[in-house]
Image 1 (tube, rainbow, N blue to C red):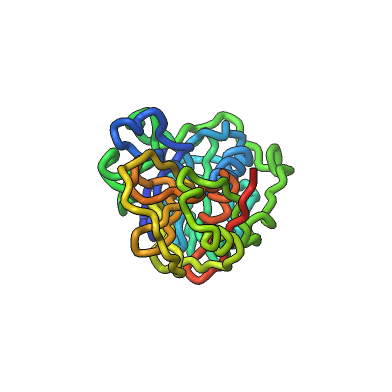
Image 2 (tube, one colour):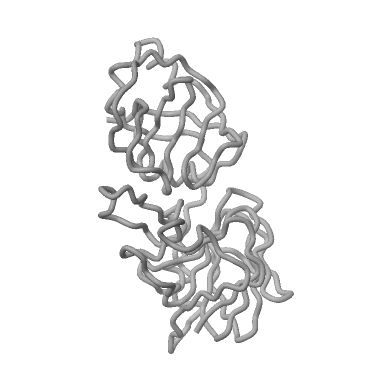
Length: 283
């Protein structure tokens, strides 16, 4: 059974929890940007939390289902229609063969997640279904693409409708972080400034990294490339702060001053250009 992409939208892709164990070959983790929302989508249709979902960014796709299944869309706020019927987020609904789901626009946050009962069953590459070029043929969904899913014998709209989604977490501008390996090489003045400054998301933000608008003096001399992870905050020689995200490289040569917590990565993934953040160090 499958869903056909009628219109691809903006950077929609199939993602699961990521591709692990291949960093030594330079392969990024990839996976859903907002694990909390993706896991919630899976739970609402009765899936295990690791099943592949469709990640939608800002402007969503038009999808045509070729067999009945249970579907849910999870995010903060978005305009969603099934044929001509308005669909509420966080409420599972049944689709019939030939139904078209249109995620027109995300109006709060940046990303939403579409889960189907049984999960999307696209081909695995390196133990993951997550799209990332060149591991997969494309980084995002293409018009006319077919994404298979399992047909479940029993689909209940009400069975999983009582799960609570904590949307308030995304309203916070505070990102909790651990001090990075090169933190102690910063001056005391810069350490204080980085913990009190309110920062802005720049236009340069993607699944690979979020760059911040403000600049800071970097007095750390050049260093050899070191391992980095999603959530690593780097300070470039030019004084820019870059927060690495799910599709980030596995090594980098810039000082690693912070490491975001998993929750902070999720919060940041729903921030857009101009939104404010601030770092809060935790032990």
